Image (cartoon, rainbow, N blue to C red; front, side, top):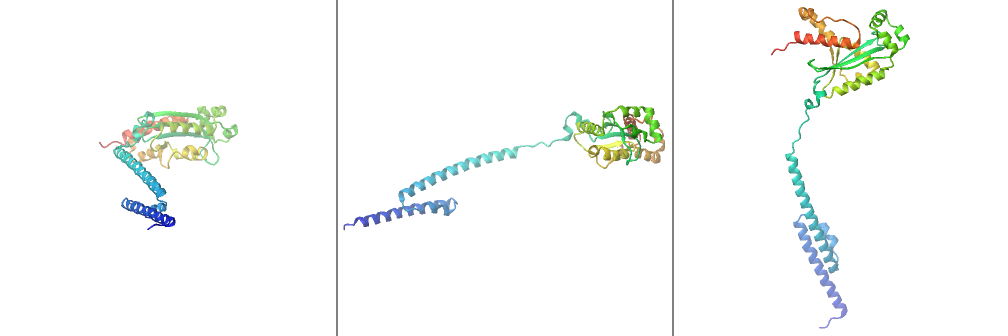
Amino acid sequence: MKLSSVSVSLLSGIKKEDRARRIFSSRCVENFCSNERPFKCFSLLHFDAEDNEKQITSLSVAKDEKHAAKSDKDKKKCKLSGKTRNLKIDKVNEDSLPSSSDAYKKPLVWIDLEMTGLNIEVDQILEIACVITDGKLTKQVEGPDLVISQTKECLDNMGQWCRDHHAASGLTERVLRSTITEKDAEKQVIDFVKKHVRSGTPLLAGNSVYVDFLFLKKYMPNLAAIFPHVLVDVSSIMALCIRWFPKEKQRAPTKKKKHRAMDDIKESIRELKYYRASIFKSTK
């Protein structure tokens, strides 16, 4: 039986279509078995068998390369994960910081001010000094000792007590010669504190230091902001010793009361050292 050219062409097209469908079905089964989403296969459904075979081959190669790359990536990831599990991260120990910080553990920042008076509303700072000790008072470093410039009018408005004592100590004359502003002094003290206190919370310390703290808050707020509300007031400790340990208090070192900032700090530290050694005794 002789087929016309049209029939041959139709049969040929049907064979190509059957072949493409078989290839498509086979590829779908592979994708299901490999947990790939089956809808990816529908883009391959063309009835031009030769083109379809090329596309399927191309996809198969790309898929194999993708799996190979993924496998290599997973291996690297596993290796990295293994390294991460074995990596030990050392906790930074504040006590192991360089010398200037570990020399002043639980630091006390001693600040003393000389003012034109005690009225926070009208009086001004004339002098500021700073010393830093460790919490046990065994180590210390002296910081800025600065006389602050104020006008003659400001000094003339001082009360009689301040006039007498500041004139006798030479502070009044030095204030008139000084070119240091409150901002300059504040920055120098802040830089000094930051240099030597790198860990722990510094506590402000001194005699009747709450008054100094009030003046710092008003005239040197950035410096005051370094300190918490807890103050180490040696005057309060002295008041308790008078009441609870009067005999020990009588043997406390006497003060010369020069009314200069650095001298007052040194006397405050010496006084607290005495209380620590004589009253705050270790039970061990």
